[in-house]
Length: 209
Ligand code: PRP
Ligand code: URA
Image (cartoon, rainbow, N blue to C red; front, side):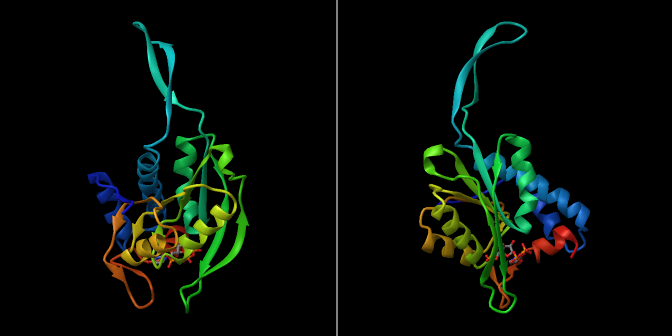
C-alpha cells in the first residue's frame, strides 16, 4: 500500500504534544509547522536534481541542485492552511491552490464551499501535494483528489498528519495508488467519525475556536 508513515523520534515527539489536550493553540501552531516541515521533506524525496559546477573555498566540484521543477501545494481549508508555510519556506517558488471543504457535523460528509486552483495541467510538469492534517473517513481527501484530477493533476500526493485506517482505505478505493505521507496511523474512528486516539478537531485547536 502506498502509505508512508514518518518514522523519526522527533516526529513522534511532536505528534505526542499535538495530541496532548493541554497543548494551547500557540504551541499547537508551532508543532503543526514543525511536523509539516518534516513531512514536506519526506514527501518531496523523489524530486529530481541536476548537477551544476560550483567553487567551494577549496576547489571546484559538480554539485546537485533541484531541477527547475515547480511544486503546487493545495491545502484543504481550513485546517490544511496550517501545513502550507513549511512547503513555501522550503520551496519559495511553490504555487498554492485552495479547496474549501467542510464536514457536515451530522453526516460527516464533506461540503464544498471554495475552489481556487492554479493551472494543474500535467504538461506543466508540476507535482501537486494536497495537504490536510486529518484523514478520518477520507471523504474530504477523496473529494479533493477528484477536484485536482478534474483540473488536470497527474498522480497527486496526499500529505496528512494523522490518518485513520478507514480514511486510507477510502482513498485507496476511489483513487487507487495515491501516495499518502503521514506522521501517524491511528486505531479507528469513533461514532462521530473522529480519529482515535487522534488529537481532536485540528482546525479548532489550530485556530482556538
Ligand atoms: C477536518 C480535516 C479534514 C476533514 C477530515 O476538517 O481538516 O478536512 O475534517 O475528515 P474526513 O476524512 O472524514 O473527511 P473539518 O471538516 O473539520 O473543517 P475545518 O478544517 O474547517 O475545521
Ligand atoms: N477532523 C478532525 O479535525 N479531527 C478528526 O479526528 C476527524 C476529522
